[in-house]
Every structure is written in C-alpha cells, then in structure tokens.
Amino acid sequence: MIDVIIIGTGNVSFHFSKVISNRNGLRLIGIYGRGRNIPDYFNKNISYSNDLKKIKYADIYLICVSDDAIGIVSDQLNVSEKSIVVHSSGSINISYLSKHKKHGVLYPLQTFSYNREVNFSSIPIIIEANTNLVLDKIKEISNLISNEIIECDSQKRLSVHISAVFANNFSNHMNVIAEEILKINNIDSDILKPLIHETSKKIQFLKSKEAQTGPAIRNDQITIKKHLNLLKQTKYFDIYKTLTEEIIKSKNEL
Amino acid sequence: MIDVIIIGTGNVSFHFSKVISNRNGLRLIGIYGRGRNIPDYFNKNISYSNDLKKIKYADIYLICVSDDAIGIVSDQLNVSEKSIVVHSSGSINISYLSKHKKHGVLYPLQTFSYNREVNFSSIPIIIEANTNLVLDKIKEISNLISNEIIECDSQKRLSVHISAVFANNFSNHMNVIAEEILKINNIDSDILKPLIHETSKKIQFLKSKEAQTGPAIRNDQITIKKHLNLLKQTKYFDIYKTLTEEIIKSKNEL
Image (cartoon, rainbow over all chains, first blue to last red):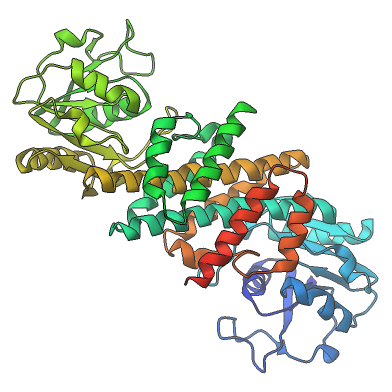
C-alpha cells in the first residue's frame, strides 16, 4: 500500500483526491491546505491539516498548488529521505523540488473542473524523476491511476503543456468567439453543440489535419472575403484573418 | 410523399442522400452530377443523371454544389413553378436562386466527412424561403430530417456560418498545431485525444467562457513567458501571443 498526502486544495487536488481514494494499492492519508478547514467539495472523511511543519509521513507527497507556489511549498516542506515529493504541473521544472532527496513530476494531461467527473484511466500522465529508482516508483503509482504513462524531461513536458494550451485553451476560445457571434445575432449558441461535439469526435479517428474543412483549407477567397466583410469593425476581424492565413499556409506545407 | 432530387455529388450531397433515403415522407428520386457515373460512395440504386436539361420533376431540388457553382447551376436549372429549389450553403445569399418562383435555403450546421456517419436528427438546420408558403414547405421537409430547425435571413445565416468557422475550422486548426508541436518533440499526438474529447464534452454542460482554463485566463505571465520563450523562432509564436492576449482581454470584458 502506498500512502499519499496531497498538498493543495484546488481543482487538480480535488480530482486526485478522488482517484487516489478509489484505487487499490493507493491510500490517501491526508490533504494539506492553507485554509482552516478542508473546502466543502472534498470528502469530509479525509484527514486535513493546515500546518506544513507537522505534516505526517507519507510515501509520496503530491504537490497540487498553483505554479508560482510550487517552489515556495517545496522549500517549506521537510520530509523523510525515504519519501518522494512530486508536483503535478505541466510547466514547472523538476529542479524546483531538488531540495528533496527523491523527487519528480506526475502531470496529468487533462482539463479539470470541479463539476466534471473525469476518467483518470484514460488520462495520459507525464512523469519525470531525479533517479531511475524514483522513476520506477512514480511509474508504479501512475500505473495505478492511468493506463497511459509517458516519460518526459522538463523541457519536453513544457512542449506538451504548450500543445495542451492550443488543443484546449485556444480551441475553447474559438468556441467562446463562436458563441459570442451568435449571441450578437440573437441566436441561441446551443445550436453549436452538435458541431463542436463532432469536431472533437472526428479526430478520435482522423488526424486533425485530415479533418480540416471550411473556406480557409479550400482557399475559398469569395467566402473568406464575405466573412471578413461582415466582421469588419468587430474585434474578431484580425483573428479570423490571421487564422485563415495560417490554415492556407499550413495546407501548402502538407 | 415529397420527392427530392439532389444536385451535386460531394460530401454534403452524399450525407443528404442517405438521410433522405431513410426518412418516412421523403423520397430521393434522383441525383444529378457532372460525372458520367455516380461516384462509388453513393448507393448504386439511386437514379443518376448528368444532363441538367433533362432533369425529372421533383417537389424539391436540393442544390449541394460548391458555393461558387450555386448561381451557375441555378441559372441552368429549369423546373416547374410548383417545385422548390433550395441550396444548402451557409454563406450564399438566397437571391442566387431568385430565377425560380419558389426558392429557399436548407443549411445543415455540421462538418461532414465521407467516412463519418452523422446523426441528422440533432443537426440544426437553418432555413430561409422567398415566401411564407415556401417556408412552410421547407419547414415540413426539414422537420422530417432534424429536430432543430432555425429560421434565418441570409445575413444572419452568414454569421452562423462564421461562428461555425470558429467553432470547427479554427478550433480544429488549434488541434493541428498541438499535434505538430508534439510531433516535433517525438511524442505521439494521440495523447491529446482525451483532452480534446473532454474540451468538447465540457461545453455540452458549460458555456465555453465558463469552461476556459489555462495560463491566459489566469493571466499567469510566468507560464506565458516560458511558453513564448520556447516558441520563439517557431511559426507558432505569433499565434500563441495573439490568442493569449485575446483571452486576457475577453476576461476583462466579463
């Protein structure tokens, strides 16, 4: 049995607390947070502390705090040399944890919201460690959580994180704009749901480049001009123009 | 029974031919195309013609050709005054069909690929007609195909089409870039699939603005700088910067 303490009480901590509590071989023995009490959304039976100095022994400490706090928390944390300290961030170098004899990274490639259940088994987990022995242990733990484990150094993990920003954050922002354009036209933005659903479903089977459709990939200048004309004097004009040019360019690179 | 002839043999025609053949109340009595034979992917039992001048009588002619050919095809088409001629495009004005006494639009808001089955019942259909009587008939037909019918004039439909470009084409291009970044780093781009799937699933429950996560919406300048630093001298730098600034701006507009 591997005993885990999670440090942090945000979104990622919340989802890890649920999966760690539910997996054979893992035991969540505590959560550390800054608040007086554990936030309401957590299971109330989890042992909670807000005193980092009195933190209990665990086999692994999983730091799930905001990126700018990881170094600070790590520096304040004093753990046994037998314990492993990992963080779960996509963009923080493993060296931020170098104070600890055994340290590493366990970064789940997913977007988390409190009110959305996630299936951890299919979430790729990107791992890194300061020694091969620690890596084996982090692998063992990750394998209890997910079926998809990828080993990466910090630099490569940063690239994975950037790709996630495109595939999730930027892609979602395209939907934000789409919804806004409909709203301006008094059209219920729910009508986009089947399209957005199909957009993601398609690329479970096709490479996204093969899935591309629309006026830009066809270099259909008549439609593009019509669209730009309608977007003129809106804040969407530049972004439409830039992305259309990008798609046309990317086609020529095929 | 409403008799339908489809003009065109592309992707949209193909999907319409399947749904029209399968719906009670509709009968696909023919397809017109430019080629000598009907393309292989169509059901071979469908009556096919490549002579527009000898086109049979139908209650409705559904033009599914590329946008730049709609006007040309419409001008060449001579049909009974009792028949309705519609096109299925998002961005072509209804006036392109004004030669015909009864005319309109039946635009399905979806992305189509030959190798992907689509469920037409949930695809919003945007309709328009030159008279109320024609509109009623187009509504009747659309209701046999889908549960979601929206009436729009040509200008509004163009806005819907632009929103679809953002929600599908541009959003998909974000996935293209994400896959490319992983490829450059020798990482299998399949690891993005769960993230992309969740990105679209989330907004079946949340407005996309509420679903936004990541460094831009948090205005996390440290991570943003790290990402930009890694993207420096790549073609992704500008687009990352522009979209990040857009997301930060859009947050301030909340």
